[in-house]
View 1 (cartoon, rainbow, N blue to C red):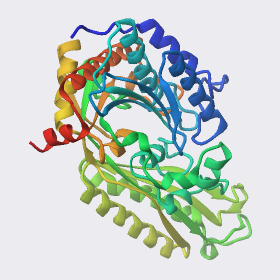
View 2: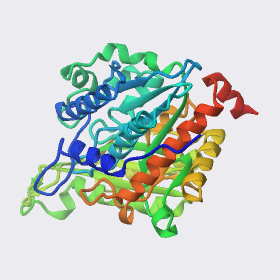
View 3: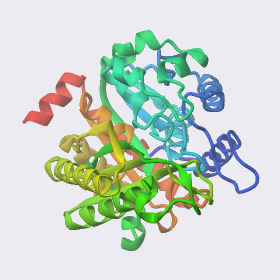
Length: 425
């Protein structure tokens, strides 16, 4: 089958226009926090574009936006897309590149007057980032598995629950406990994404194919000591929560460095009352540990908890620990990876296979749907930052690989059951 004509200028223009939603003009950062009116504006923009190219657009109970391009009736669908939300002060490529890339594939199919055998489903997920509610990939989990009551009860820093936040933007939280109907017949899901690392850049590669997505374990800790006057309280009488918290931060760094193929971060730390002249009486912090070996990841998390308990005992500080997220590592579809690697070789002549240290919606869909991820380089591996950037030619190349992969999957897959049969053979 002939190559699809990817329009690099149209692709870049769409990404730029989408980036006007949630942009802070002071530093260029993107602030499309999940389950907010701003995030919904991005979904509305995508829905308008999808309608303009003739897709049948729907929205599931969580707020994921779905556009369907009917095929010839082969049975099952091929889903492509990514997410539209960002972290606070994030960049314009994380998630968004995969969404506009998927839209460009649809536009290219139209330009070439190509109709696929299978339905093509363009997916714009909500709430991939865990920045607001602590747990990542809530939109994709709602779609393919359904959410539990504990997940709907997750709350943000202002005490707003996920359930209430969904209702506030017009979603249907009670229905999110069941998988979304649109996921039933999906034969394969393909996600285009920036790497968020430096492997491709350092290797001089234009595109990569992911074989495994690291899991993550996330904790929130609350350390309670006693607020006192910084001048009038002797050191021996202090119950300084921040001193204990500092030891926890160092322990995370030390314990993770001992393990192989593991990373750990304390990216949230809030000090109360937060005054220079007050001994900190309470500290809230978040711990994020990721790796490709679930046993090593869990063992390290337990060591972190024990280190936190020891630090709090030493400083007469109370400790509360809440589990926020436990997402295991996931191997992506070997058969689909081979198909995508073949598409990459056809487009670029090479197919670099690599592991993703960052989590993605694909890591959730892979638990129910054969899934593959296409990576493109991002400058210096910088992501979750206003400095996040990918070269237009890399975005176009990745989208060309995505388009070729869609055509190849369309030619080889018949139904979701047939794809799973291939996986087991």
